[in-house]
View 1 (tube, rainbow, N blue to C red):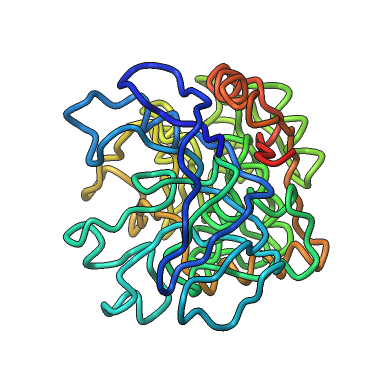
View 2: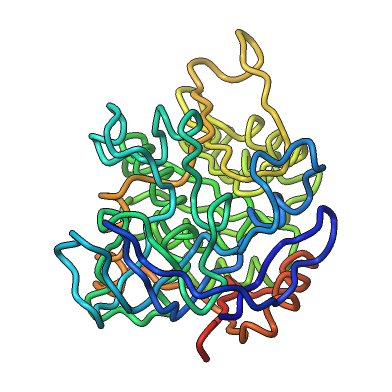
Length: 346
């Protein structure tokens, strides 16, 4: 089969031919319908060799949906032909966090060498994907595969962050979204669907600010040296009860800290390498700062249910598998409107 692989440290990914996978006991083989292109892949491909915790080559793609093509011995609950989404952050299935469905926070994955597809295990940028366990599949139940595949990360990750902050987002509150791209424009929709908060979106790109307005942002602000002051003005000097930074670079986390309200919550989701000092006098009183990762299995089902209700959609651009290297180039250059989706089987 054809697959997109990251093969050499520092080099661009390549479309290659690899052996077809065969499901063993408990495994499921998917014919991949759609695979998402994500900044996390670029972050992985930007690491030096000594920072990689897995061997190359690596088939990319940690967002995947597909059709069940074959079942390994002992698999129940699914049949050939079922259309499913893949829950990406695989865990051991047995520790305390996995028992809660929080495999994104598995306590033993590192020690056991368990890695997500596309982020250590072979991923979805291929004609076929081998899934380790039926618990990592969620039925699409009529959702369009292209629209659904970004929800497995670009939907699930902001949903997890927004859900944690909902108790603070009461009527009259403000939520700030920094970075209105792939994850950020989904976060705007989630905030509008799940809370009464006023939503303010920040970005350096006028195109992304336009997208934020289209999907429901009440206010948009250019993310420059005046951004924090503008947000403070919009909130009467009080700041925002919840701030979601989907960039995570040093300048954006600084803005996040500058716009948070007393007892506010800051979620640093982006992988830009920024850090926010926490300590008495560094931030307004009782501000909480977290760096959430992905989401739980139950939350993925909730995200897909939101999409079925019409409350959530993702702007997508599609590419063939042969065009997948171009999709990564465009993403790296900031020239993707929403999320890029690769169609490995046409």
